[in-house]
Amino acid sequence: MMIHKLLIINQQLKQICMMRKIVLLLMVLIGVLTARAEGYTYLTFETTDGAKASVPVESLTLAISGTTLTAGQQSFTLSNLSKMYFTETDESMTTGIESLSSAALDEATEIYDLQGKKLPTAHSQVRQLPKGVYIVKTKDKTYKIAVK
Image (cartoon, rainbow, N blue to C red; front, side, top):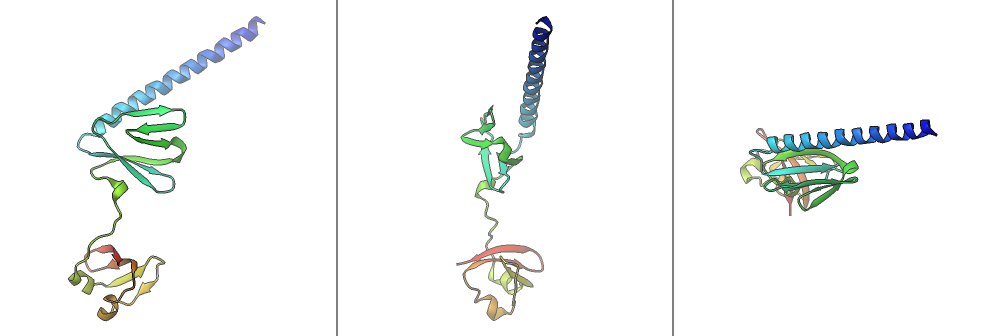
């Protein structure tokens, strides 16, 4: 009976020690996050499905409850998070679609649809692209464009 009680006490002490380590690790991480946030406007979270959510770092509070991380007004299931990093822009609003000038479009060296099919780059055909999203490569840059 006495040995059984000692084993239970030993197990409880191990759990307390593990909890202290976790709390210490979280405190260190929060300190590191605070130090690295200087000069950045947003903390961006990327989930395992590629979705991004950016939270302003000004007056940001982080809380972990069970398997949920709450950052500002956003909540995330910890197992669904793949990345967390600081950015200067709100990446949850970024589409990657840019405006392309007529001159740059005329200089297109390669055009692809979203299925990866290479399309003709003749001037008359480029101007008559059907509605959709395309990858356009010029001499200087690669663009993602939307034809409406």
